[in-house]
Amino acid sequence: MLAPRGGMAITVMLAFICQAAALAFPAEYFIRSQPIEDPDGSAMRMFYEALMRTDRGEESAVTRIIHYGDSHVAADILTGEIRRRFKRGFGDAGPGFIFPVRPWSWYSRAGVESYSSSGWSMDGLKHALSASDNHLGAAGVSFTARRTGEWIRLKAVCKRFDLYLMKQPGGAAIDVFLNGEPYYKRVSLSAPSIEPLYLTLTAERHGAHSVELRTVSPGPATIFGVVAESETPGMVYDAFGLNGARADRPLKWDRELLEDNLKRRAPDLIIIAYGSNEAGDADLDLTAYARSFSALLASLRDAAPSASLLVISPPDRAALTSSGWRTISRLPGIVAAQRRAALERGAAFWDLFQAMGASGSIDSWAARMPPLAHGDRVHLTARGYGLVAQALYKELMQGYVWSLIGSRARMNEANRVNNGD
Image (tube, rainbow, N blue to C red; front, side):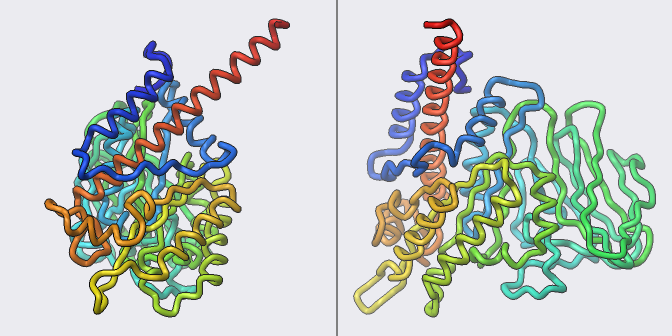
């Protein structure tokens, strides 16, 4: 824990964080120190205040992070390592948001078991979305069964489950069970129009629990995900990554569902990490891209006004040319556009491209032994993602410590004024 209650001076804590981060990897694997850009300190304030409440152990003080992105996030290697560090430092408040059906064969979440019947179809994984298939919720994926007797079962260590469902014309009826016992009977998912539905199941005590959903009538039964959380102070880190995703993807999702899901999820920090796929688009219009990225930040700000926003640039990406691997020429322009949009929209910005070493870095990372990047010069290895996670966590913790210093200074000034000094 990093809060002052431990008796460690804040300046000592800051020095410890910096030294620990520098010594965690040998010198040849050290990533550049790249501070999070937050010019007036307001962009990250709400997240650091939530983190402070969790750190103090205030009742039900759960700090929630949502991380949007592409395949760098979908693999849950980078996000899994960041999640592990946060939970180790501030406590574990549960697995968070979980896809109840595997959207891809290698999907998994540590500490979670999920099973399902074969009759579930998925929407949201296609690059092109129409108005009829954009009802995807906050994570950008939906799962629908249409026959009676289809089921989903999930096991996790938590105290409470929250089912994110959708009502629609002709919707099915469902039964829901907690630890094998009926909890909801014949809940109708039918409504004249599309609308969200949430079902909460609360166990008597924290521990290993299961939730099961069964369709008991024909018709569409659509679920976006299951949240598993405890009610004790700690961290929850949701990874909303989709392979091949670009920054304009969330703008195509049903806005009302997205806003309602995010309101329900109540994140304290939303991380936005796109750009690798756009770098591969030969016809990319950077002016149009900048407008689209700014619109995404505005949309998320409107949907979650109580959350801090943090934009993370894409890592370096290279293409093979006649003279060897060279950074894709569009990438620096994408990074610059993201930075401008972030600062204009009141979001913080972390330049992963520069932290890696900027142009040419992905090739040098791939050439290291053991390698830090894969041979495609797009994706990092587990070791590479671990290095990025360490660097990002270090910067977040430095920002948090400085926020504690500012909070203590404001408190001292208020006491001075109140005492008439």
